[in-house]
Image 1 (cartoon, one colour):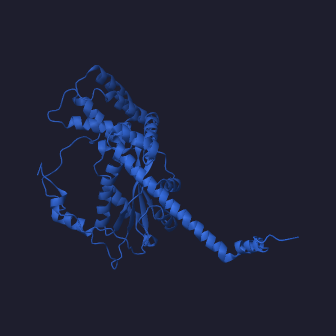
Image 2 (tube, helix red, strand yellow; image 1 turned 90 degrees about the vertical axis):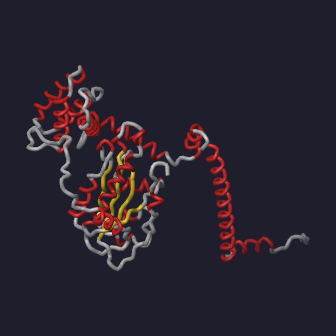
Image 3 (cartoon, helix red, strand yellow; image 1 turned 135 degrees about the vertical axis):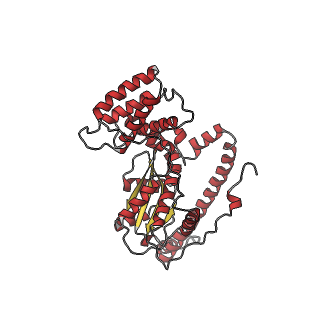
Length: 386
């Protein structure tokens, strides 16, 4: 049989041997990898360009912004779900309060503001006194009337409501609420207390001068090198006592400090936020500040977990420093995979979100801290319209 001169008799075999060659396979894989990376970069660049153009258009109107985040960018999806879960939990807690009643705390604070006004009105809070007493009665039914001491929250609520009904003039809603409160008070049997608006003793100078406070503020630095020394829980609890005195919108305190001092758990938590590379292995205690959206009935308050939580954290940090401990505030990134991992590890509810993390421990005296030049006073403040 004649052979085709255009076809090599060994072309098929040679091709098979070439494709089976290890070096050739490695080369093919590398080439494919380069093509894939180039394509990925190209697609990423196209996506970024489209995102910039679309975001510029969408930012020009409220409707455009809504469409952008509804159909193009899901960055706020987790926050939206947390807010809705918080509203649902708020409604559930009204009927079945556990350790605390959010509505009772908020409304008692509102009553206190009415009690301390000058001049004080004869009639105030008529629009919400009924729901306040209902909350008091609901949580009162969950109390053990045989116990020697009620919770501080119930003592505070009793004192504020008692004072309110002493000074206010009856209207039909107030008279009805008064009757319910008196009946409930007989069952709860709360002794009279002094948890009502009062005059502070300003006769003496504060024991901490401004010079001392500035010195403490300058001493505090973000520390990343700690001694391998256990941190007594009593010191952390004392710092949280200080944090608990921080201002909070309507006294709702929508946060919880989650403390981890077991070495194995510490290392698991350390891996979750970004920014711990290089020093996470020597952190003795990790703190995760959790905000709880269940404290609010409306979206208007959705940012308060971050505001109130941050106010409390600053008090916590200064209290640690005053006891010879140091800390490092660690940013919490809004990244879905990390939030999911944290939620699973901590057993978070749908309305709970991380505000920030903190590393805590005794500072290593030989460890360095960043200089971190702060902005001068002139850049941090403006009086009136200067």
